Length: 298
Image 1 (spheres, rainbow, N blue to C red):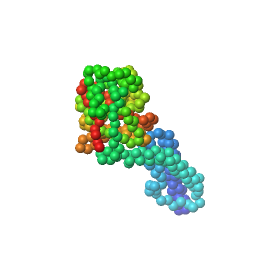
Image 2: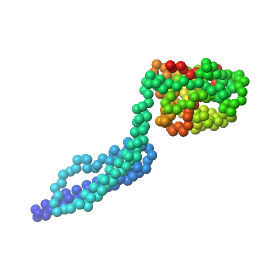
Image 3: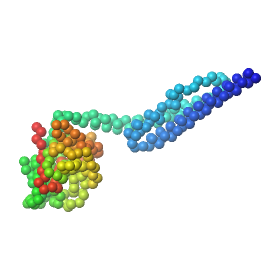
């Protein structure tokens, strides 16, 4: 009777261990399924946040100790666990290899972007406005470094590059590589922009307006609010902005940043995209007597 009791106790322990191993197999299968689903996500931040909890081995937790008859065999269970563990590790490694170059590129961009105003001034670009592009309700001054909006229509000659309907103007110089400039603005409804040269000049459609199409990006400034525009999508930003705005472009990295400049530099908005053409600084002005001028920084 004592031997039978010992056999029953041993069998009970073995059954509990088997159930534990089966539970671990089920957990690993669930994790493999979740990792397979995660491998198809395009949200790399979500992947980085999710996969560590899925890759923790169930065996890392304290497991109860069992003394099992040496003649009992769990070779099949061990093989299943080993195969599942290898598969989990392979999925993790595959996904890491996919996102590592892109994550490194983003990290390099963030690390390399200037931090202080002195850092930004190393990339200062001297820009001038192009008289051939200026609309009839805008007046250039200060050697084409300033522009003012006027209710009175100016007599400018016709030119294929002139904005004939919208109160806009572009710069002569293109922006490539890294470039930084600052502008001072006054009044209301001033759009501080960058644009491809191919933006349409004739008419009043969205394809002509800075920020209203995929060819341009624009910061709208007023006394009480500030907005970012691109492709006719308007985004409210935390404002108001100061009367001096800093613009930083890293063309090859695909970054465009707008800063409110006073005693310190406050980031208003940053764009991450792919620029396919050279960029040109420009302005839109919708309020009479609004002015914008480039700041001389050197």
